[in-house]
Image (tube, rainbow, N blue to C red):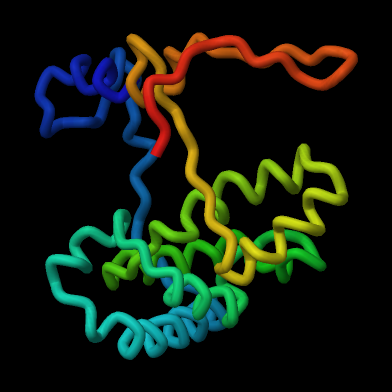
Length: 186
């Protein structure tokens, strides 16, 4: 889908319109954060000054792929994983607080790969669709930075383009029947 959108730009450097629609309303002006968010930003920056100081620049440049279970545990100890989840799993923090933490992690080149899928995708799905037993067994480990997930999103003729995946799951009396093909899972 992204490739399709990119092809629609007359000039790839001018992304003000897609399919002739004016996107200028999406211009976000810098603004001052509320004092509590600025305080959190300072706390996260102070933590990162020490926590990522030993990471070489090349490793920090690949922060999305940086797997460091100990680092994820340190985030969990501070309540910075699953922070917007409701209690008892998280601390019901605001989306702005989560934004501040994630923005600082990425800006510092922190290794986020260990917890990223579990905290951002699998955990919220368990909150919405999981049984109470699954939530009790899995969510505390995600929020503590001790339980990690991976996802497989590839099938023939789709790559990682989720919009083109043809696999599906149908609910049955006994659970679910999954139909489709996977190429690989990492």
